[in-house]
Image: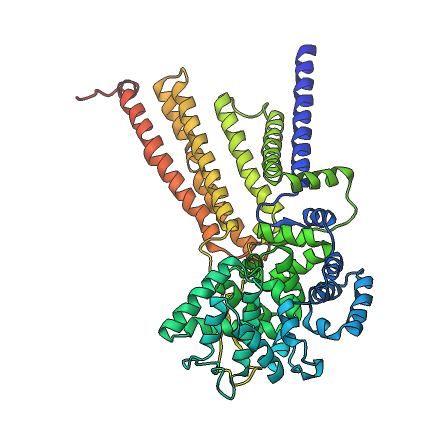
Length: 564
């Protein structure tokens, strides 16, 4: 008795240790911020803390004497409700008072200076942006004189396209209403002359200019000019040239114009994000995925710092906005820094801890029930624990990723514009949106995988049970009776499948998960397939063999003669 009691105490103590170790492993794994399908707010805040703020970028732009860029960063900072930038805000009026012309430009430029040296500020157009600088008659004549004497073949080809008569939404330069097109060509010509264009954008634009001059077809080129015209109205020269240095294609230009029209009040956020990541296309790709929600994510990142904007856009993930930034423990801070520095390793560690935690919990819990469970092979027990752990990992991954748990799909931007004929500079733009479609979201894939793993577990349990009966040192008739006794086990795949479907449908009805019939009914389908495979390919052949092997024994017991 003392020996048995001592063994029982050791078993209980070991079970408790396994359960505690499993729970601790899951807790640590849960505490590790992961970047699987969403960006944790804590990681984003850590990235922002290691970088400067938007106000700091405004100060740097002011040091470079790009007053337009400084004003844009400052406006973005103020629109996000951030403090700082007081020195920049106080210096910009002083710059305007000392040099109103350069302040109107947004930044000094040698070609602007050479062309407009004798044009007074009151001769400029009242239109905003660089368009207002290029639109008045005096400015157009002065800028045109500089560019017409350029030896750059691309500049000459650009000016030549203005005289083509095949425009459908703009008017040729020589017509009465040709001022918008001419101002657009002058602004674009200044970028080309000053080598301010991104190399790939410059090559693409050159090909379109050459094609239009050769064929007279200005279709695509006219779209590009309309996009440039739109940006020229929104940006001064300092902002205009800084942005075009990063636009890598005509397609990016088109999508950029859409973004400006879609969210005019958020142009400072849009613009500064494009400058911070040195790639407007990265910002546009992000908004193409997440749309208006993506803008909200960008705003949150902007409040945290420029490093947060860069990380969010580089990873192209939605923000885990449900996480708070309350005071964290030392362990949480260290885990956040570890996740930021080594994202793949931290994700692997997180899911490994989930697996081993679930394994230890299953192992420890099973030891408490050994005294009433029937004996089974070690292989069967290990298989059960492994597959239970895998299923638990899928559940924990879904629960730890808010965008997987909710299953919601964000509506991205389609970046499609329909532009009417432009008789005036202030043309209206009609925006047409289409909702992007996805074949199967990650939440559905994970739920289907979860139900599949459950049915694989059921199949292996049935397989190992048949193997256990077959390997037993028992009479054939006893084996046949044991197989008949396990009919409920062999039907368990169907029970599990129906239960999974019912639970999924109930959770969808009460709104805990997103409605998805595919994930719900996949459980039932896998259950039917599992039972069919078990009964037809496993149980029936084995029972048939047992019946044939035991026919003489059965006949002897029943007193009947066997006819052959």
